[in-house]
Image 1 (tube, rainbow, N blue to C red):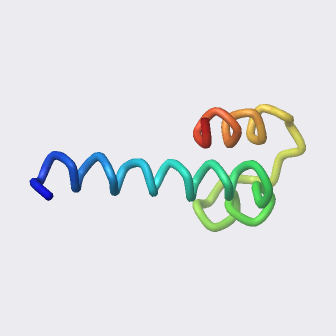
Image 2: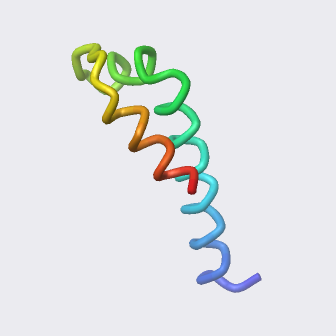
Length: 52
């Protein structure tokens, strides 16, 4: 596996992890990165887009 394939694989796993976290655990993820908790649906939509 060359460096390009490894980089794309790592980015894909990161996107999958962050998408799942934003889709299901947005209220837990936001305070970890220093953002206030929000009940807006856009965070869950962003999580869905990252998973797709």
